[in-house]
Image (cartoon, rainbow, N blue to C red; front, top):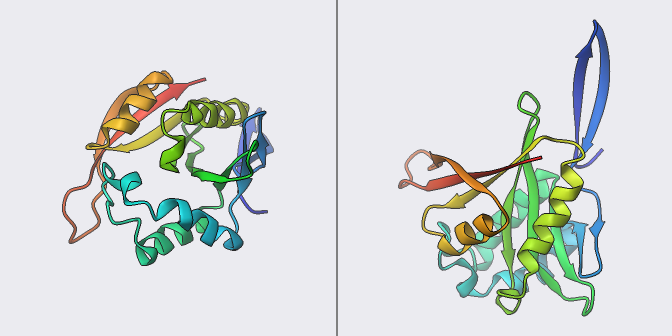
Length: 188
């Protein structure tokens, strides 16, 4: 059961099981989100190999094949990642994912999103986020987003879709420099 979370709900001393799918195929007239597979590496790397995509990102060298490969493998292991396809051309637009479902808070994160630069400023980000939120808000009450503190483009994009900054987190791994991220939230 790839991309599923099983949630136990206790009601009047009975246990109900609720399954939350975080990797369905999602589609509207403009784009299609397809669950990421091993076969998607080359197509997605062709998009991600543009250094301009990563300029404001904390991991500015993600355009390098070996760095992107680790990112891609993490995306596959998340069981919530998608490749984004432009329905009019069939081109790979980028990638995004659901991650870190929190049963107690009934929340999930959307993130690790990137788009080919030719799609910047075309309105694709709000279309992707709306498609994802329309789906996931059938299952959760809150959606969160992590954004690097220096990623002004993504911070502005989240503000445009109504997300509010609610926290700051240092997500540096041991032995690494500080990696400050902002947390944005949208409620159902």
